[in-house]
Image 1 (cartoon, helix red, strand yellow):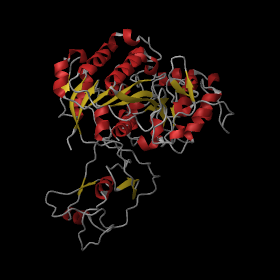
Image 2: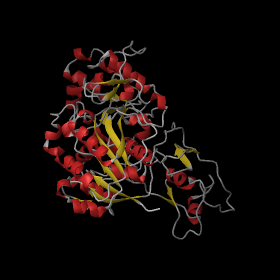
Image 3: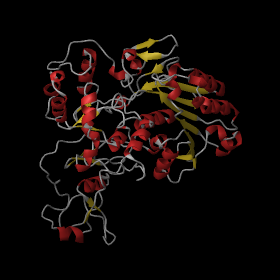
Image 4: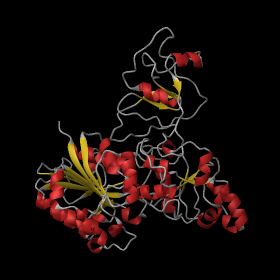
Length: 511
């Protein structure tokens, strides 16, 4: 079967490309009891074959061991006997592995047992059966990736060195050059600034929309129109003139399409990042879940009767999930706000409303969403650089969205995260035994120095770039060049997308 030829426009750091390759879903981190070994799966007098389920690599890695040595006559087994000495282990082909630094984005989060396909997942010190975790892994070749952002291109080349990267404007690509690529699929995430709800909403009059309109002009004139198309943008695009132009072009070319407003929470990821998506296929039957004139707010592998539930239609004809308009820009349709009494033991602090408190409580008690701890790095000395400065603590204490590792939510991480405090993303409370009420109750009556002492007990820090990358669905091996600063990592990740959501839509599009 020939590989699908893919053109990636506005490629950024390569989120769309990563979605094509496939994603890995972090397993739920098990509680950490006193370390104990797995039961031995072999005897000292025998050599056993590699575990056919793929358990070997994940089990070995979790114990800081790497195999095989170059001189090892055959692969080692999943676990050496507890009585086995270090010398004996080396003789059998085992060696101690030096694990990567947790500072590097290429470092594997120590407690996330991750594996492609079937096999086992190591949680803490136990191996448990693992289901298929790839959202998308198809036979595809990215024939060209196009972006003008120099720094993003450096990251892209770092992770996908064999992919042709065109550092040029899209308007600078001629029709003949497009035809020569002979692509079957377009993946694109056009500039979002013209459509953001907090921006000027320049839409088609914004110069940054020029390249997107050029694509729409080129599409009907291609010698071979692509079979598939996927587009991602911010919420707000669905009510733009640019979106209307897109739909007209797709209909002219003969595409069947479906629009979505989705957040990673629909896949059990504890991060709200509401985005517009469109998938389209050429000259084929409509999608089995096609709902004409509706923007779906759920994935189609859920109950079909539920897909268009809780909709309201605004004056532009776009559909929204019930309650969406009352939420801020960092919340998602699956977390709609409903009035109700405060949860037992809850109290209002900072600048929150009762509605917001109820919504947060509901999210944190939703078992379908993973806990944040599944996506976090181990705490270590290098984490000190991520703690909030005293000045920021006192100044922005009442504006922070504070979450604990056991929470099942976090707000959207923007490109200003780590630089600006307000509205750029949640912060992590690492002192998990400290109650917020004990810190914030009557805090307004304290002096600045007393406030700082109180707030410091929470040990608030920013999420690390690696942790945000985990929440975005980037696999452990995805990294940034050494020359990219932490601030730049935050900026690039804030402009990126959720890999797992895109991977899921690609599998639906090609299914």
